[in-house]
Amino acid sequence: MAVVVVQDASTEAGRVPPAVHRILAAAGLAARPVRPGDVEDPAAALAAVEGVVVLGTGPSPGAAGPALVREALAADVPVLALGTGARLLAATAPAAGAGGGSGATNGVRRIELTPAAATDPLFGGTGRPSAGLRAAPGAHVVPDGAVVLASCADHPVQAFRIGAGAWGVCFLAQDRAGRLGTWGEELLGRFAALVAARAEHTATRAFFTRRAGAWEERFAHQTPAYEAAVARMRLAPGGRALDLGCGTGRAMPALRRQVGPRGQVLGIDVTPAMLAAAARHGRTRHGHLLASDCARLPLPDASVHGVFAAGLVDHVPDPRAALREWARITAPGGTLLLFHPSGRAERAARHGRPLDPADLLAEHNLRTALETTGWLLDAYEDAAGHFLARAVPLPRP
Image 1: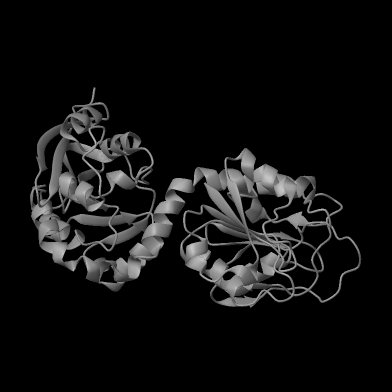
Image 2: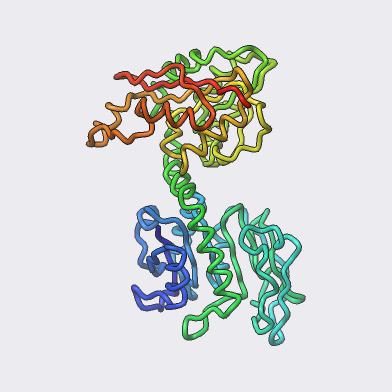
């Protein structure tokens, strides 16, 4: 796992402050130092990266600095921007608007966390910022919808969050020795832990975000295969069906036809860009779209009658935990259908490797995994043109 560390243009190439390196390493993260002007291809710079720390940009970040941050925001890669880096983050995000504040500061001002900080994934539980921290002066520009997390009397926007995974802390910057102080190092440590915990989802979102725009057109020829697979679920009218890891929602029209107008269809995906593409392609005519971790679903026990998951098992961090969660939400008599529009041998050959006997989707492995997570496998097909496994819930004690 790696984090890109963006520093002032004046910083020596390849150098990361020792404290920053130490904190990232403690969370199992490698630091990749870059200077804004050195980034020619932002997408390439973020390849196999789980987070971005912006320590500063200097007075002239150039076009590459904003492009790198913009690419991170688009791919839902967590970002922590400090000092002048926070200005870059705010200016790069869409629909920026001016925050409050005067243009001068009178020495050190007490910085206070706002009520929103108490429930923030990063700031919650950090405690009051150190008394010696100096408020950053000026009217800071923050995007519409940004959540203000810290303020002071003269300069009310001192820290903010954009979306669910990008933070700017205007008042926190390195000293001449590259140190952030006790409170700043605690915040960076919390960010490093958050990056490590989200690493699997970050990689998934980054992979699919870059492909979301062309996904529907690229795989439109697979629609009949999706329709045929959904037909194997044999869902009753009026039920609730999920298209898990729905992508652009290609299974949603077929699911709607099965459950009928009185039923409910949910398309669930962890990548917002894929859900946006699904909406553009009219999937909201067939059901609702929901951004969620497919292994931690905001649904009651036994509330679903059909779970369709195409190509999803390979993309969840803990497949058995996901199967257990899908069993929790499925009502007695419900159906789970695992599908892929190509067989295991075909996919292995496409990637230039032999079939792996340890592959979870091999029949003997999958049968065991299902039985230990609340399912009974009742159909298994690993054909040249598709993979399909259907399971039903085991009786609950």
